[in-house]
Amino acid sequence: MSKFIEVTDEDFQTEVLDEDGLVLVEFWAVWCGPCRQMAPVLDDLSEEYAGKIKFVKVNVDEVTESVGMYSIMTVPTMMLFQGGNPMETLVGVQPKPRLQEVLDKYL
Image (tube, rainbow, N blue to C red; front, top):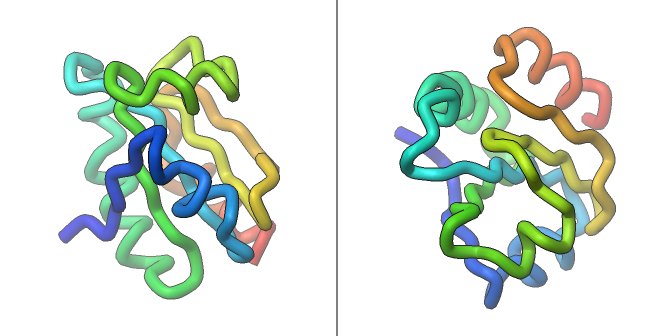
C-alpha cells in the first residue's frame, strides 16, 4: 500500500516546501513507462521509511507551475527536499539500493 500523497500546484508549498523534515518528490506521468517501473520500488521505500520521510507524487501533466520551477525535463525525476530546500535529484530509473543510499544520507 503506497504512502504517497498526490500534490498539485495549489498544495506543493504546504506539502513540500513548508515541511521541516525530508520529503521525496517523484515527478511522474501516466504515460511514462520508466515511471511504472519505479512505482513498486518507491512504494516499498514509502513503507520502509514511513514516519521518517514523506513521499509525494507530482503528475507533470497536471502540475505545471511546480514542474517549471524545478526545470523538470525528464520523468521520472525524484527530488529529495529537506526544510523546503532541494538536496538531491535523481533522474530516470534508479535501483532501490541507490535510492536507499541517498535517503539514508539525510536521516
